[in-house]
Length: 214
Picture 1 (spheres, helix red, strand yellow):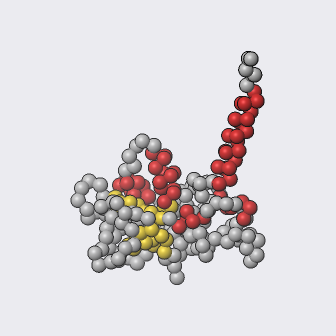
Picture 2 (spheres, one colour):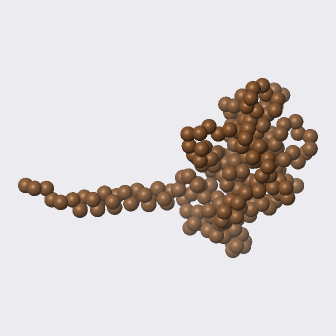
Picture 3 (cartoon, one colour):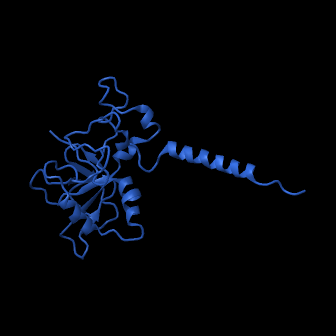
C-alpha cells in the first residue's frame, strides 16, 4: 500500500487527476467547488522537480536539482537528470530515474532521499524569494532534513498557513480549500481583472484630461 508525498515548498499534492474531485455528487464536503477553481489549469501540480544530495561527487557542492519528473503514488518520484551533473544516474537504468522522497522507506536505497516540489513553486516562488542571491542547495537540503515530519514522512514540519495542507496518507479534496490546488502563478481571473482595470484607468485618464486649446 503506497501513500502520497507532498510539495516541500507549498505542502500541496502532486496529482491533478484521480485524487482531485471537483463538484462531485459523492460527498458534499469532499470536493472542490468548480466556480472557485474556475479556469485554473491544475496540470501544474504534476510537474515535479526535487532537491537531493550526492555525497559521492567531487567538488564542494554536493547538492543537486533534478530535471522534471512526476510523483509515483508510493513515497517516491521519477525524474530526469536535467542539466545538473551531480544528479546520480545508473547506466543500467533508463530515465526517468527513481528517487525516494523524504525518507528511505525501503531501508536499502543507495541514494539519499530527495525533497520534491512543484516546478512552479521552485522556479516561480522559491527562487524569487532569494532575488539576486544564489541559492545554496547544500544548506537548503540540510534545512529540509531537519524539518522532516517525524510522524508523517511525506511533508515538512512547516506552518504553511491557512488552509492547512493535508499530511494524511492520501490527498483529499475538501470544500473551501481550493486555494491549495489552484495555480499560484498563472491566475486567469486575476489576469482578466488586471486587463479590465488597465482599460478602466486608461479611459478615466482620457476623460479627465483638460481639452486642448484650439
